[in-house]
Length: 369
Ligand code: IMP
Ligand code: MG
Image 1 (cartoon, protein in one colour):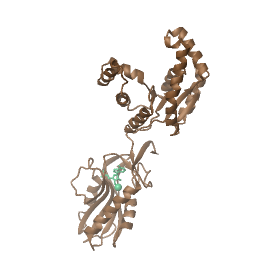
Image 2 (cartoon, helix red, strand yellow):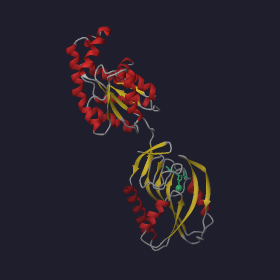
Image 3 (tube, rainbow, N blue to C red):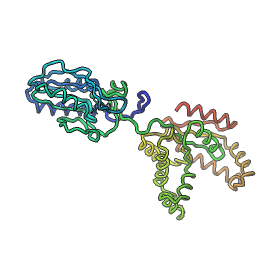
Image 4 (cartoon, protein in one colour):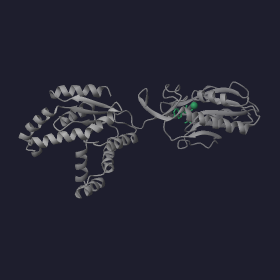
């Protein structure tokens, strides 16, 4: 992922794929033109890299020149094309091949046709490396197209976003979701996860997704997924991962503009962690970290027994049950710790101390993401 000005872009077309597309264009044009000596005309600024690579590959004599047109502002094409540098040579009777980096709305191409209307060239051939069919709204024939691409903003290989990105050898695509901070929050029972989740949610403006809450919500509101989940629970079976993932996906979609999410209670297995990675990738985002509150067993037991005295939760008053829950937590999460540690995304935070102290420790981790 790269950042240009305020926007994030993800890798889209590799240098190698571009090279192949350029070679295919060269081969096609060289074969069709035979012994004609063409004048290749690049449209500046975007086409400088294409023109350079193209003519180096072109196997026969040719001429090269440029015109300079400008139409783009930020990430949007405009109607108003400026002619910054025009034609500087007589092209009467010549075979002209326009080399464009990209054809989007076709406005620039329309201007090119206007420029050539009275030039009396032998033929005007249009070749473009990238072409966005969904955006194109003109009738001019495109004789050679390197690659058709979806109607999304790209940078690299000559193309820029407000001046940056032209120098990149690969092409990147604008991310539909901009930068998010997504964390998986972990902690054994009694570690103070709930308290800290509330704090993080406020401080970083994150959406707290507790899988338990999501389940209860879907079942209570009898959503399709809720009913599906319930059908398994009623049979005493585990709800399949895909159902849970679909519920989480809906939650993420509901909050598409969020700064990020705190996942709580999910994932619990390697397969779920992978599924969550895929889910976030489909949203053009990612899990940035697993943050785990680390608290010594004896402290946990003490805290939970204390809580059991007032909460009336029976599972908080039996020391054996408590120890068993803690043990289970470690057996299950050890795998996840490895999963995230392998990606350098595991952050253990000392969960012993005052609420404020722990909060500060968590913030130190989040501020670095
Ligand atoms: P059109 O006039 O809408 O066809 O757009 C053509 C010009 O807009 C290109 O020559 C580029 O300079 C610019 N452009 C179009 N799409 C993109 C893009 O996705 N990224 C960067 N520049 C673009
Ligand atoms: Mg251009």
